[in-house]
Length: 262
Image (cartoon, rainbow, N blue to C red; front, top):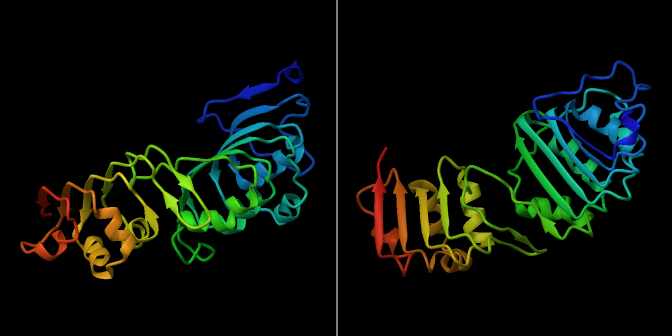
């Protein structure tokens, strides 16, 4: 009966059971699926499913409980994935992912026809984790460059950017076209510097930021950072000392400053 359906969706909290052997299939009678939304236990299961249904899928939305290599043949299976019709892809994972470079990056390189991509990942730390933070330039180099049909690169939902409206990527820089309010709470200093010194936020007018990353940005005194800060009218500095005049000079359009001490 299920073979007659083209679309299949499950609630995110409904996890498909793991297969016991590599010869088993998640959907033995699913030759007509073109849209699939499911939750799987592992990245290995995801690779196995794409091997089975990849040639017919146009839209694949998957929530993965664990992203790591647990089966020896997963890499070899990944190399045989073929998804010529896939246009939309969403991968979600709420647990720390220590093997982002070993799993997600090579998988996406196999999916060159994707035009709409959403990734919601928690990149963790560990033996196999990246030794640098994952930013837009990293995504551009290792993922987007392998997806020639990618027209709309997804919105990265992150705690640091709760008001993000749109994200435009190019080979040289990233522009947050409509971002007007930016809240940088409990964010690594590198992310703040990356955003202000190597990205464009042409319409930013309101900023909340911790003192330490702000000091690093001002001290570095890069031209792009000055441009990004040139229209800011309201700034809130968390854990700010009493003397901040040198920092405030970096914001020529500032009319209101509020300090928030811990």
